[in-house]
Length: 511
Image (tube, rainbow, N blue to C red; front, side):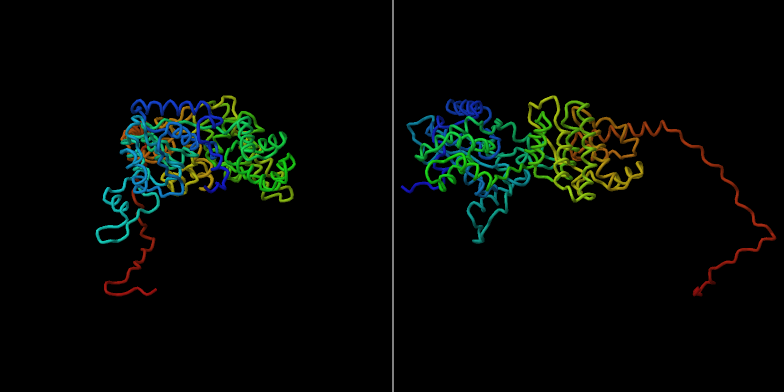
């Protein structure tokens, strides 16, 4: 048998006893799989959430192998439209495996779908006829039939979760990628949550990284220094896959034992890009309780300071649990905005600008009350120039009311106004119409600022209540008395009569 050249596959755990880290999460997975052995649990799927390389799919495979179960896997390299999911997973989830042992009554087929956060599109389903033809590959005339992109993928995934007779494990790096980043993400979340238990994975601890590194080195018969392992662990962000790949690179260049100097030289020559995507980056940023830690995280988030200011500004009002934290954040954000001008006024100290800018900005985020639950940061709606709530009428009214430019009204005032009328536990309340009425907004404009879809029944009830309060407010306003109508001035006999400039009928006026 040919030896596997990729060490991440060669040293992938084949049993639960080889796994490291996330012990609590592994116990939850084991308990859920035990429920499958004894029947059918209430929630027939689990959703594993965590950064890449922490062992989400390795845990699922290892435990399934210990149980003697077959695994049907669909990963990021496969198509994930409705036809592909049904062909690979849905059919297998409702039937016994071809390799099912009739004597093993508790044998199951584990359906594993990796990186489901990369399935794009909404929840609109594809017709059964189109799915059937796409699965066959041709229609009645022999013409090739394919589904474009991820068409119907999420709808088919929901169908799988609702009807499966086999355990299903979903895995993703960022849960908001599965819910979607549009205004309907809550609806998508609510459709999935009745079917799945959500288990969040943490990055591997230093001790777990140390044990895995030593195990891989011993299995490869490589000599190493303890200091080399410590240096390798210190330069790793908790990514098990990256750790094994680093070991493979070191082994390919080592002439004898792996030393600390070799590890440090590799780290200096090829520093790993640890840039964080904006949503997981904000999650880590808001969980930080020290300014120094926030500064370090702020430098990693994949947004320039000018954009990151907008993201932090938008999310502070809805995420901070205390008003004092919001006031302090506004102060430091103001300093960050002032420092932003440094990039235009001073090009000689650009490094000072970047570090100072990020320090002031990031220090606005730490708060004394730690976040224990999931942090749902959101995309700044005012950055979506075509969003329904960025109506020209709203921008114009705010601009006239404040005396500011339309750009300032859109970028500076609208986020604050939206935070005050958008439902949140700290500040916003969409049922408080007073501010919108004072600004002269219509009911639909108030709902748009609050981020409420106009098609919902609850929004329609809100619009009706708004109009009732608006009419009551208008009735209380004093109606100005009509101005007296003065009679037209009679022309004096001495005053020459005004000439009629209109040409006689049938003639054209040339000058």
